Image (cartoon, rainbow, N blue to C red; front, side, top):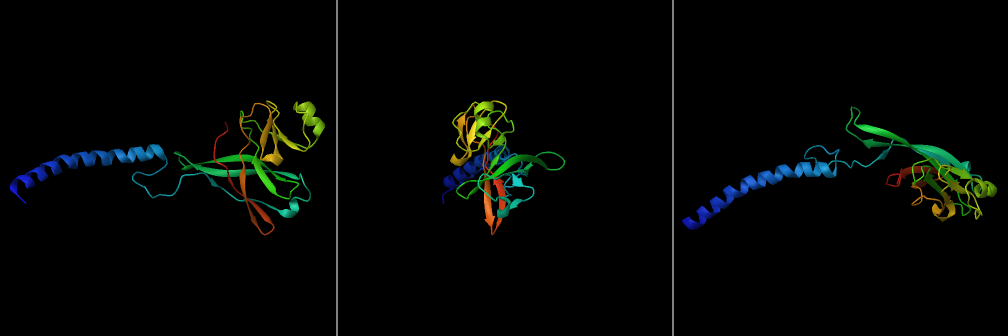
Length: 189
């Protein structure tokens, strides 16, 4: 290596070190912006996604016939900047046995404005109370703004201002036990 080359290398290195240090300091705040509950420089830390606080489970015998609907409350924890380090949110839900024998579970929070909707079996009540005359089976119906959801078709909105179906719970079967495992990600609207 010649003397000119080593001097050039030394000057480039001397200029690069402060730049590398500056960019290194900028990475941590950017990561904290993307994951606000991450500890400084904890790149491989656990996910800060919501987690169930306790298990909600039913037995298959709790659903003796099609259209059996059982209410439940699903509690999940969210990491937060508070003294406890988390916040617990309780989400009301319905577990319903479909005529196909499948069991589905949905959040009872209406995606329109966050009201709590009902499970309505009576076709006349759906037609008169919720202004939807085409109900051939039980539906989820929101009393606030009259949104109606077809449970048999994945919670599809069939009437009202709701922009999408309600959030769905993931269900795991363990023998005859039915476990409500987690809630579909997303907010109210």
